[in-house]
Length: 397
Image (cartoon, helix red, strand yellow):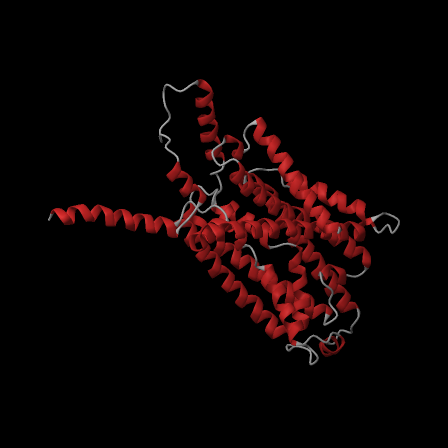
């Protein structure tokens, strides 16, 4: 009997240590090596009390995101100007395969987002994508994914710098103006829009972003529809021969072209990489299911209608993005002008996500990470500026 009582605690301790080792996370490791009292010391000096109060205030500030604003943040991350590249994917895949792929991949994206949310609920310490990888890859997986996570989002911001440059050149239509200037203007706008330190605040910009892309898509649809009707007779049979859209892929479509068109659709649904970061600020994380249901329905509807309608109006020669197919040229310039908010807001949220991740790594136990002190704001402004500068250099390279 005495032998059993001696070995039972050891086996329980061994089981506990094995479970913790299999789910490595920097915060967990830090907790094992620190011996701080969980409750504030009533005898501590005023500066320490102010620091604790500042941290508590920051934690409250970063836990205000509800499911409606989470939906908006996910829309900002997912639905950008790239949605207007889907008509060209339809031109490669054909109407039948295009609709099937758009709806099918959309359903897969919703399920994937659901699984991501379940991981977050089961492991509340997961705040970013790298933290989730650490659950199965340990510290090595965490560090490798951290680098990939930062690079991916910075490069994505760079792509929005480039898209903004193209949009400005198209809108202004001034061949004498150097494109480098418009690239700098785009970078400045991306920097300013990335400054809100919480997603609860950033979601306000998201409403403008969503309205911008809806109006831009509508203008493109109407413009291509009017151009299609003006170039045909009133006979529906004449329309079908003049605009040769097809339910099937063109006979000369190669496997590489089909795969590229499919990846364009897949990329349009790529929002799960930032979902952990968004959910980390939710006051009621279980409500995320409402967000992904709303997001999935909105995305599938927008992408399917955009791809099918514009492809039917323009045919196999549809440009990417489809705004370039809007005629006359003035309409295309107007559509690009309307799309400017979505270009820059959707790009800036990537910088915000990276900034919040790096702030958490650099200042894990400091009020600085919550950007609610002078030091916090100074570091945040410099960090966002540095990330945007790197994105600008990549875009101009």
